[in-house]
Amino acid sequence: MADLQTLVHSEMDRAGSPSYSFEDLSRRRARRQRNRRIGAAVLAIIVAVVSFAALISTFRTVERPANEPMPAPTPSGIFADVVGGSHSAQGTGSGRWTRRGRMAPRRGAS
Image 1 (cartoon, helix red, strand yellow):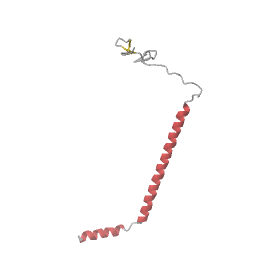
Image 2 (cartoon, rainbow, N blue to C red):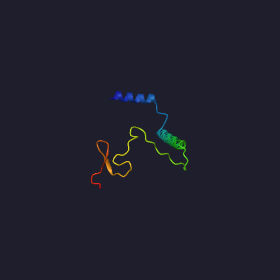
Image 3 (cartoon, one colour):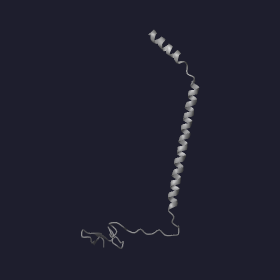
Image 4 (tube, rainbow, N blue to C red):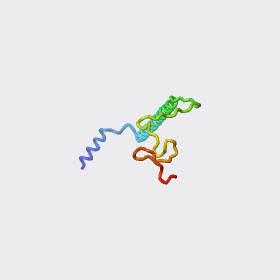
């Protein structure tokens, strides 16, 4: 046990004492945390500015005068010619589709 103790003491003497103190370590830690916070703030500002610029450019590209009416959408696709559903072509809703594709009066309707 004495050999181990003398070995540890001789290694500590050979290595010498560190040239920095605990205050130096705490200052370094504080500086590193401050730099991290500053970096995070800069990154957040950059993301916010880029997002705002993208949003502005998106709305700026679509220019339509306020007094011009919006054009009616034209039906397209495989259901473009289909009219009806559970309502008639006139929109009265007085019929239903049969299996043969014809309009039949609604049950209970007079």
